[in-house]
Length: 210
Ligand SMILES: [Zn+2]
Image 1 (tube, rainbow, N blue to C red):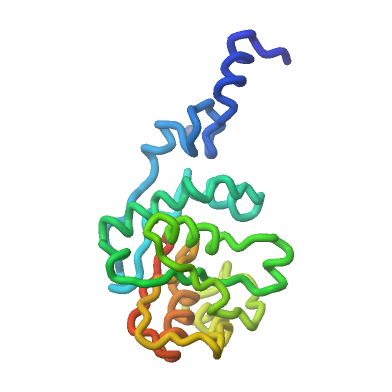
Image 2: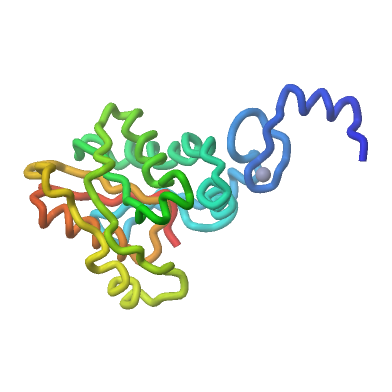
């Protein structure tokens, strides 16, 4: 089908589409209608775990495009939700480094990027904090967590992470960053590892919570 001249000119100036519905928008991630559907989270169930928004549309689509379709240009837009939450809860004043939840090396080779690292780097750049990217090692390629109960998830990730021995963590205050929180099993496993290795305080931050 041919586009109208008007649509063609619009495409030229605004080659952007809303990440969720495809509607033409100025540079950004969501159209106003989709943006209005985002459900921000205000309360945290666990005092040291923070999530910015509920894992519902249009965030689900955005995360899928970012993570599984490799649309890494979405990272700064998605990180905005995390940065805003950091500011609101003054998390940036309580930490001195960012620790992305790592992927297993096999998964990393398949995907070519770690979505948590990309989000973490955006937060780090905003608050001038270091990213301790090689600190946690995912030593077991845990099967997908989808469809597992909380107890099964905890068993699934127990012992999946290690901390590099040559990094001194004593006294450090870390912010763990991940894309989605489901039961918190992954973040808790990482947090316990960092605390056991001498970290003074560890918070967990995710973009969305299921
Ligand atoms: Zn939209």
